[in-house]
Amino acid sequence: MSGILYVVPTPIGNLEDITLRALRILKECDFIACEDTRQSLKLLSRFEISKPLISFYSYNQRYRVGQITDKLSDGKKVVLISDAGTPGISDPGYILVKEAIEKGVKTEVLPGASAVITALVGSGLPTDGFVFCGFLKRKTGKMKKELAELINLEKTIVFYESPHRMLKTVETCLEVFGENAKICLARELTKKFEEFIRGTIKEVLEDIKNRNSFLGEFVVLIYPKSDTEKEID
Image (tube, rainbow, N blue to C red; front, side):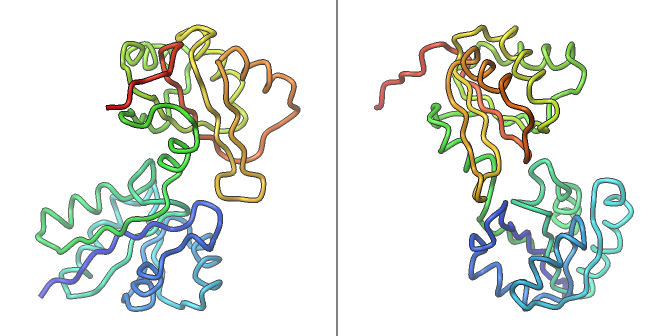
């Protein structure tokens, strides 16, 4: 009899956001596949959970998939977690879930923390339709091309960005969407210094130019049209 693969979201900042179901499954499983064992131990220690851990991150995931599915085939209950948020959303997880499904292994995904959804709801931008792009291309030209392909969508565009690239990225957004398009930069979500920087691209660019530095990863949200007022059906 095959085991079960549980995909368990973990808090994106505030540890109080862990769910009761997530804690129960973490306590009941046979072992945990995690992105960074050191980071995961902080969470597990906080809730007095002790389980065997196996690292499962971007550079070893293809090698690890076979090891994990073998354990699932032996009837083990395996939990997949990432450092923060829901595994598989710009984090390792997709290929393990795909392989488990193809092998007929029961797979359960728990609902929970997501930086994308948290930022989207708090942005003040339209939420009835959105496009999530993960991390954009690093080179400016390729980033412009990616963004330009989305310019005619009447949907909120969402992507991740690192703090040291934030200024250049907003400058690129201004070139693509113009100064009056609405943008929101969300950082340190659910943590003590959580912040939403909202306004037109021009306004937000002037704001961040006057800052010395940023901490925390960013979720960037843009609505391509200058007028974000939408009729509610």
